[in-house]
Length: 276
Image (cartoon, rainbow, N blue to C red; front, side, top):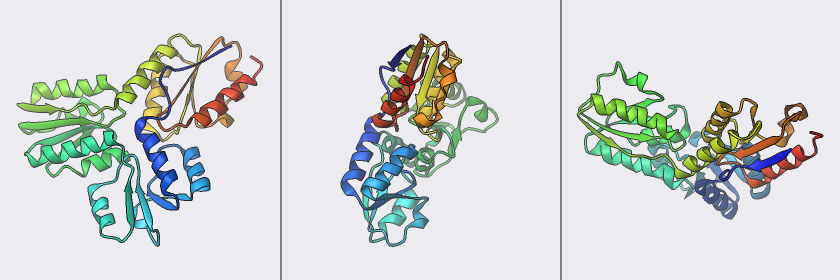
């Protein structure tokens, strides 16, 4: 059986930057998981004493706090600055960008439409920078019965699919007098999604490796599943089942933006032990 890696996969710039910061800082606490990969979070805690707190209210006697790659809300950041804790900001620059856009546009009187998952920490952070009205939506249907203002700015969660973002933009263009559109989808997301689409069309089994709470990893899995029915999302090699591979000739592998290479290597090594 051929095992082929996607042309683009795994750690993105923002995650690499955050991991490097955490390793250098050591003995610190992150506000929420630094990245969406439990195995890497465990490694940072074990090797660098970087622990994860559920939220800002869980801070006690910590001396150093790391802001997660997804960012935190503007209000939590202000609270954090009022303490004596040393702050290290590991927010991905691609996440900081929509935060800044939302703050600027709402200061100019625009309401803001955010294409994304309202419960995702990145979106919560971005929304907190809107001082006018924010509409968080996952599809255009959610806006159909909403009385919209004359001025709207549109941003996206960094890991969303561009074609779905454009559906919302096109809808607003027909309904609202002035629409300011900001494409805040990360280009690493584009590349990983294009790569898994290409790979899954020629594979008869696809393994996507990454955190099951990771938005970008779930997007990769959905794309793979569209083109290859036998696609599976796993966090570690322990979840692999040999029967998945019986009769398969071509196995494609991709990984989410928070998935380290050492986990991908473990997955490949485990697959190679199967008698397929």
